[in-house]
Image (cartoon, rainbow, N blue to C red):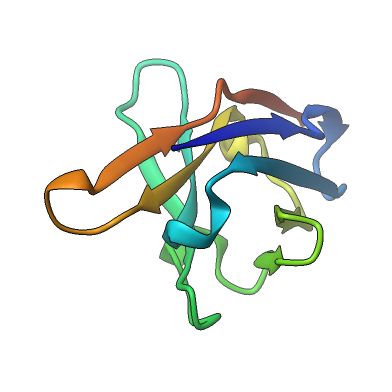
Amino acid sequence: QVQLVESGGGLVQAGGSLRLSCAVSGSVSSINAMGWYRRAPGNSRELVAAISGGGTTDYVNSVKGRFTISRDNAKNTMYLQMNSLKPEDTAVYYCNADWGTGRGRTIYWGQGTQVTVSS
């Protein structure tokens, strides 16, 4: 199993930047893909960005060209660099990890970090 801890959220003005971090501990070698999700007030949780074990990335259309997901395997940390932030990016951001295989396959979540973008 693994534990995920997000950090880096905060309050920023529109047009600003933030970098979120997701520190991973535990059986990290069994992690497959990882991702960043967000949930805005009144909305369902949505996938923002994902990165495979091989480094392939994917983004929701609304953040393409502004957000970058990355993994530093040496530091067991995943990042989300967020540039040109907009008020509609305001949400609680969660990292997750797709772990294991077969019947032992499990999705793990962090506790979330608040991102607030003021206009």
